[in-house]
View 1: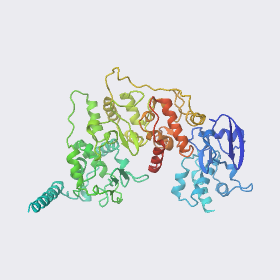
View 2: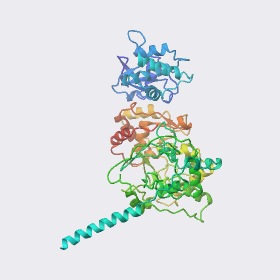
View 3: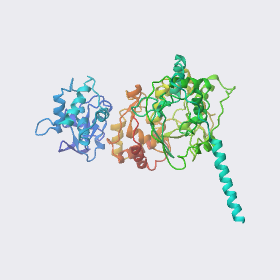
Length: 151
Length: 426
C-alpha cells in the first residue's frame, strides 16, 4: 500500500505495509538515522520525533495513523545546515554521554519550547519525563533545555 | 382566622424543626491537646498504623500530586461540588495536632471533627465506623508520629444546600450505621478478617458499589460496580465481568502487585490501591482476597457458565484500524501466552473491554498505564495525540468487536472529551 508522508518539509511516497511503525520507515526507507530504536515499546523515547508539531514515540506509531500530519526528525531542525538553538544548547552543555537518547531528547525539548518558550524547572522535568537516558546525563540535559529557553 | 392559625402552625413546626434539628445535630467540641500530650510513638503501633493506613488508602486522597503524604489539600470531585481533603499531619493549626485520640475516634466512627463540625461522607466513615478501637488507636499513633506540615486546606466548593454542614446529620440518619461487624462463625477466620478489612478500613464499596442520588452506597446492590474518578469500578459480585473467574490466589497477587497474567493491570485509581496493598502484610492481603473472591462465587448452572476469553477474529473492519491495531497494540498485546516487559495481556482477558461503557478502555488508550514508574508494574504508552480522536474511537470499537460478544459502544467521543477534561493522575 502506498502512503504519502511529509518528512522535514519533503513529501515521500512510501510503499509498505500500513502497520509498519513510522520509525522503521524513517530509518530504513528514508535513511534518517537520527531517531533510534531503543525499546520498541514506547517506553524509552529514543525514537521521539515530531508528528503534527507534537513529540511522539515513532516506534509505536503505525504509518496508517499519521494521516496528513507533518513529521519532523532531528535532521529537520537544522537551520541553513547549522544546529538550531535547541541542538546548539545540547552541544554547548555537552549533554550527551553515549548519545543514543539525545536525538529523542532534543525533539522532546523542541516541542516543549515551541508551545512554552519559558518553561519552569518543574515544567521541563514533567515534559521530559517520557524520555530516558541510561547514562544518567539528566542534569546536563536539564541545563541544555534551560539554555535553549534562554537563548 | 383560620388562615392565621395555619400560618402560626407552620411557623411553629419550622421553628421546632430548626431548633430540634440544631440541638440534635450539634456535637460538642472536644478539648484540644497540647504538643506534650501527643501519644508516644510506640514503634509497634506506628508500624501497624502504617499498614492499616495503606489498606485504607488514606494517603491517596489526603495528598496532592507531588505533595507531602497525608498533608491534605487534594481536590476530591463529587456530584455536589469539590471537597478538599484534610491535613492529617499533626500540625496544630492546619492539621490534627490538637486532636485527642477520642476526637480522632469520633471522626472515624461518627464523622464529626474535633471542633464538633459535621464531616462530609466523602470521608468514608460509613466504612471506618466498623474499625476496632485497637486499629483506630494504631492509626492515630501512626498519624501523630508524622512530621507536622503546615498546609492550609482551601474551603470546599459545594453547591447549596450541601455547603451547609449540619445537613450531613440528616444524611447520617438515613445512611450511617454505626455498628461493628460480628464475625460470621460459619466462615473461616481468614474470611472474617477479610470482611472486616474490606467493609471497614479498605472501604472497597466506596468505589465498587453504586451510589444513590444522595451519594450513599446502595446497600441492596453491594459490589455491583460503581464509579471512581471517571473510571468504571467493575462489579465484584456475581456480575463480575472477568474473563477468568477470580480465585483467591489470583486476587492476592493482583492486589499486592497490581497485575495478574490472567487479568491484566490495575489501572486508574486501582493502580494506587494495589501500590498501597503492596505495603500491607501478606496475611491481610490474602484475607482481603479470600473475602472478595467469595463475593463472586456462585453455583454453576445452565444459565451461569463461567465467562471465557474470546477472540472473534473480526475481519470486516477498515484497513486503517486493522493496521493501527497491528502496529500500535499487537506488538505487546500479542495474544500469545507470554508477556513482554510491558506485561501486556491478551485483550480477551480485559474487563475494561467488556464493560457496558467505554470509560476505562478510552482512558487506558489515551493515558496509558504507568505503574512501572512507581512499583515496577505494567506499562502502556499514552496514545492520546499519537492517535487522533477518530482513530481512538475506531480502535476502541475494534477491540470491543474482536474480544467480546457485546454490542458496539455508543458515545465514545463523549467519553474521550470527558477523560481529557478530567486529565490524568500520574
